[in-house]
Amino acid sequence: MGTRLKVLRVFKDLHKTRRDVFRDDDRALTAARLKINEEFKKHKNETSEENIKEMLKMARAVETILRENVIQGEHVEENKVWFLHVLKSLNSAFCNLRP
Image (tube, rainbow, N blue to C red; front, side, top):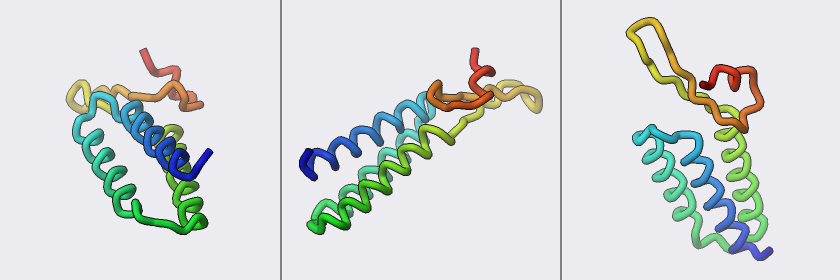
């Protein structure tokens, strides 16, 4: 696969993960979208294959961290209940808390 296709694949995967991880959280969805787009635009003229490879590796690491380590909580009752939003891909005991 060519470098351009690899970059586009990582870009799409990051946005898919963003939508999955931050679903129903408009503020986080927007902030993550802006950050992903900003970082890719900042480096769009990069020509060094080595630098691009390193940036792709970093982007994949970020995507993995988002997918495997982010848990969001929603305050349901004042000072009493929190509802945890956990991705099914998160291999954790928390997955059992999901309705």
